[in-house]
Image (tube, rainbow, N blue to C red):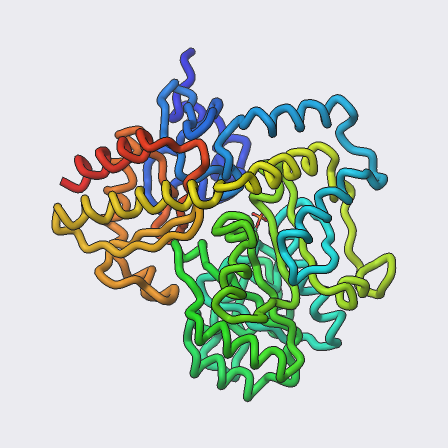
Length: 429
Ligand code: PLP
């Protein structure tokens, strides 16, 4: 029997809930049958039916070099021959930690884990342990993985804390999480005046990729830093998506350039630092990080943490992105894509706004660039879904939901971008 995406989806649904191991893969937001990917090379993915797609998801961020980069493949093959996992320290963990710290000056120490969820969850525990406080602030539309305390939507007012977005999370577990609107300065001020003394941390995606692509506005970030410092709350940057993706020094490098001296207290990384393997990290100043076990009272551990094959993959990836001109070329390519798409939208009278940084981009079917989650979700979903399927039919694979960012890799050529814009032109017509 020939394998089709549909037959595989049917088979998958019998043995895996919803047929997928992570919900967004199921195409529920856009409808239709998910593509079952058989292999990928460079900027392309090939599905079970042999169809080729220009890939703008890049495994949701990690594949900044494209698929199957020779230097990464070689590093992974070599590491695999030496052993998959030891449960004992290795030199490569030190190398990867050194490489990350060299590029992120706000951190003096880093701990490696296996997923962004784990890194964000551990950073929260560390912030609570280090400050002796329980409460935390997050922002609507920012995703920090699926730890219980972070699966929260806003309560009915600033004095009420959140309610969980998932069944199975006791109200007691989210009672300390306050959810605010992204980029809403008066709300931030009020939240600090009400709860500042009890706040362990504020966690934020500095460039949010889980409500498409929205930046934290500079005055908001500046004030957030001031308020955290004044009230003794830790500012935690979730750079799982933006890290080593929007620039060599991540989003915090961009904010430090605009706001001299700016640093978060803790940072969370994932995706690019693993190059497509399960690897993530969190880090900060030594005094805070040394609160972690085995030195301090905050427990955190992992059987596969710092896995030898994953660290080899991440290290090779981080070395490649440091080649001279890497981010300049990647940024130019991304820019040519978003400019081209915007021009095609204009030609066809389709409302459009767009933004990008490094190898990450977003576009909205709206005339003005949204600044928070509610505005993103108010954009034209129906039209987005038709655009998504139109592109897919033309061999262009963007994220299957209007609230997800897009990713360009170093493997995307000018021809790939042109082909994408041409596909968009015929779809938007
Ligand atoms: N934080 C951000 C900003 C993310 O985008 C994600 C995943 O997309 C996570 C955390 C969770 O990472 P993971 O899926 O590796 O658990």
